[in-house]
Image (cartoon, rainbow, N blue to C red; front, top):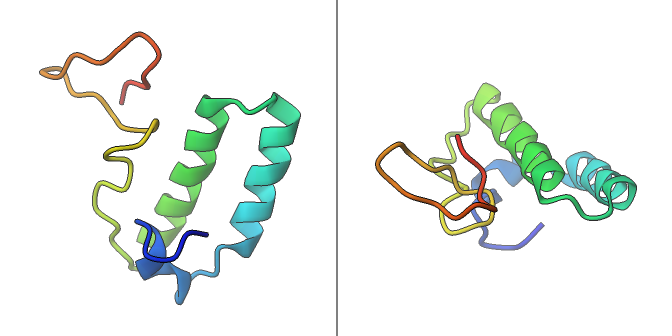
Length: 80
């Protein structure tokens, strides 16, 4: 729950604690899977959007960034 991070606008509307705890649990269970981390963050972003808080491209500049057809990403990146 980084102050000033891309999810900050949503924190007052949808407290992140439950999502954070779930993410920590999932990270322990998957040995730190980047794919699971990004999935958990996407779940919070989706819940924020459903609550009326648009976060924009929260994944830009992160390991969760989504690659477009015109953008070549490395073999370890997630494709959206």
